[in-house]
Amino acid sequence: MTDTAVKPEPEAAPRQAPPPPRRRPRSRGAWATVRSVARVLTTLAILFFVLFPIVWMAITAFKPARDAFSTSLIFSPTLENFAAILGGASDLTSALVSSVVVGVATTVVAVPLALLAAYGFSRYRFPGHRAMLLAIVATQFIPGVAIALPFLTLFRSLGLIDTHLALVIVNLSIVVPYITWLLKGFVDGLPTEIEEAARIDGCGQVALLWRVITPLAAPGIFVAAVFSFLLAWNEFLFPTFLSRSDAETLPVALMTLVLPEGVAWGQMAAAGLLVMAPMLVMAFLVRRHFAEGMTMGAVK
Amino acid sequence: MVASTVPPPRRRSGWRRRAEPYMHLAPALLAIGLTTLYPLVSALITSFRHWRLNESQEPGEFVGVDQYSRVFTDDTFYNSAWVTFEFTAISVVLSVGIGLGIALILNNRTRLSAFTKALLILPFAVAPALKGFSWRFMLNPDTGVYDKMIDTALPFVGDINWLGDPFWALMVLALTEVWGWAPLIALMLLGGLGSISPEVREAAKLDGASPWQEFWRVTFPLLRPLLLIIVFLKAVFSMKIFDQVVTTTGGGPGRATESLNFYAYSQGFTFLDIGYASAVSWVIVVVLGALAALYLIAMARQEAT
Image (cartoon, rainbow over all chains, first blue to last red; front, top):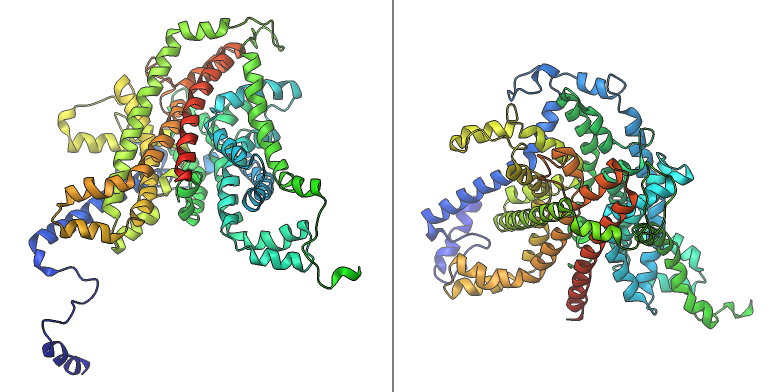
């Protein structure tokens, strides 16, 4: 019905009618088809490149030990690898606990410090402003060994080796500068009017930060918390230096699956899934902020 | 009390107002200072002292620059410096090249591209140590799934023992890094491509530019500042490579994949020579520090424009 009603119109002004928006001109014909097929194929290749190692590890994790080395996709899925690493023969439960404890503690300590500093950098201009900001970026260039070695000897003499506290302290060296930058970007983007209004209403500085800034910056705080947990969770160099067994985190504990007779790949894959799955979810949630965080504000 | 009707922003005394910003920064700066400056200074001092943990729990006598001259006469150090350089060059070229390719392919509005873009971040979130194990597993010369694919698709390359061959072991190490970084770099570049106005590229097309010319004459020059930053960042992160060396190759075969960080680690950890390891780590600090200075200068310049 509508068809017949609309049709005459384009015929009334055939030449002048603008082409329908967002349609590629048809005239390219065969060449355009080749190009779009090539585009789809290369995109699928990208998907394969990005996803396959993750998918393959997930599949291997559910394979029975005798099939770990088989590349066949036909096997009877089992949870035996997970049973082995969670309370079984090669128990990684305590490493899992350490990872969670260190990750949470690092986040809980780092985020408030960083938010406060981010607010300071964002709202005030003061002598040393630029120099301090650049110094914070510069800390990211310090090689891990140069931080881990002195802490190794310090913590040995303090009896802090192989404790969660030691790892949390050292993690701050990476996490605080990183999320300070990240949060500064967020606070820069917050409107100042609300703060001014709150000030005029007699709101003190502490109340302002807690009642006004924190809720406004909540999305940024969430992103910063995710990043600090992710950095602490994936950290490998520091726990390699500073823990033995009690405070060993998951990425380091993977090494215990490298046995003299070879790597227990089924269990490695299961443990790998445990290490990677929460991070994949988190990264997906904050994916828009990765690029800006990585370049530390240099790229807008 | 009476003045509360129309409160002008409260005037604070001079020093309090001046101290206010620093009070916000103090906790974070204290945390950063204690966890970065303290170890740097401590390592610098230790680098001038004799200290082997198997001999003593306490640092020994000052030996001047002895340990630095040992660093610079040690072939193993030069080997790891060269390995680190090779690794950095390979992984920068591959990450940025592949990242740029991915960005150009996905720079459109189809649904498949949008779906792919959303997933690009995933490899970067995988712990580097785990990336090492994963690629080691997939490239196992007898049973690895990638090894089998390569054998089937490219039978002429022969049966390569990936981690047993010095060249390929370094390539595998680079691949673990490229897998995480190329998609991330693609994301950064897609941001950059998005900010190039379509009219500019349209204009080039109307002037009869081929896609090739359009890329090199229009898109590439506009992306160049962003590309420089990315190359730089990738280079610095590559120079710090450690995790995958441990989990993929353990530095081998021989010393073919021993990076600088790994070398410093093995001196301090395996040989318990804290003094010497500190000297090595300070050499790395100076090299990375010089690069950091270049980066910060470039950043400051960009800010100024």
